[in-house]
Amino acid sequence: MLLLNLLNLTGVQPLQSIAAERHGRWVEGSGVAEREGKGWREDVGGRGGKGYVWKRLEGKGAGKEGGRMDHVHGTMGGMDEQAVNRQREEQRDDVRHRLAVWWEVSARDLPWRFGRTTPWGVLVSEVMSQQTQMSRVVPYWTAWMNQWPDARSLAAAAKADVIAAWGRLGYPRRALRLQECAQVVASQYDDVLPRTYDELTALPGIGDYTASAVMSFAFGERIAVIDTNIRRVLSRVFVGEESLGGAASRAERELAWELLPQDAAQSVVWNESVMELGAVVCTAKAPLCESCPIRECCLFLQRGLPGLGLKRTRPRQRFAGTDRMVRGLVMQALRDRRAELLADAGAAAGMGAAASEGGVAQPVLRVVLDADAVRALWKDENQLDRCVASLDEDGLIEMLPDRSIMLPE
Picture 1 (cartoon, rainbow, N blue to C red):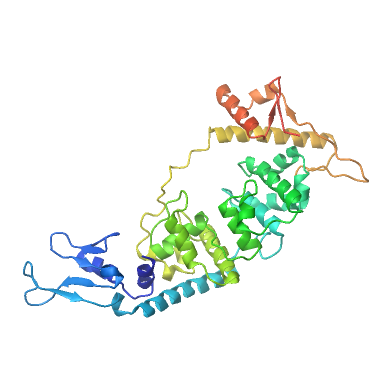
Picture 2 (cartoon, rainbow, N blue to C red):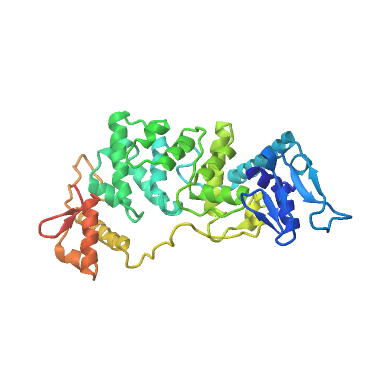
């Protein structure tokens, strides 16, 4: 299928599209183009993929039912297999070149890019940017890395400081998982982030995507990085269909590996540029096709953006009034209380760490929100209790016997 799509992009019309164009519709997956009620049948790519095509002849006798059939034997569009492969490689090279040039001049200047941070800094950026826009991540990442520049320093930090520093990034459980990851790196790897996929995915909170991203962006390894943006771009450009979300399919993974340059350095640029394109140009609901550097190569655009924005997964839940919102209110109240305590102690705030001068020890804060203050946060008592209990289960707060809550120490 990818081969046929690439030929179509480069102006070499494959027999699949010819059949569909002439005879009405293409029966996906069947190798057959049909025009209903007219007795037409073309078998494209059949007979072991050798490119056989059966079609009714033009001219005398062609209109007779059961008329003579001609057996056309050859390769796709008259091209032999080597020519097809050359065409495919030329198309891939063209897309890669266009994206590399675009990346060079258009990539956002994020502080963890272009070799300006450590592998640990790259990992922190990837964890923070999960389900969070990168533009929101930048100030948090900068302050976080200033406070805890390596795994060892984060491993030794107080949990309350770590949770407070996460701020409004969302999904605060990630903060504690990141600290757990730091503790393993500090204790088992002497504060040096491991380089292999198996070692990375064995770390707390690190899955396939984050491990692949670190290997590519931090270590320059050749590996397919597969996230929502990359899946969307590859599916649209090379398949001509919308990526439906959910977990990456086997076909999407195979496509990502098939298109990955063999050269390691080029594969890094490819991963970075495709991901960036999906984030700022080839967006989910409103792609900026007119400014896309590979618009001439995009099968999705050629087909009129069929199914734009279509998703396999359920619609995203509204935020207002959800448990996630209530959990956020509780965490924000604790962060606000902590800031008040820091101010009262005369400590300089910033990423939640107190500044020390002349060797004066940093104050130890016990950040507690009493039961009345907790109850005032939300009108639905049952929902509030449920959310407080879930935060306690996640280790983000501690519930005290008098129903007050506190940040973990």
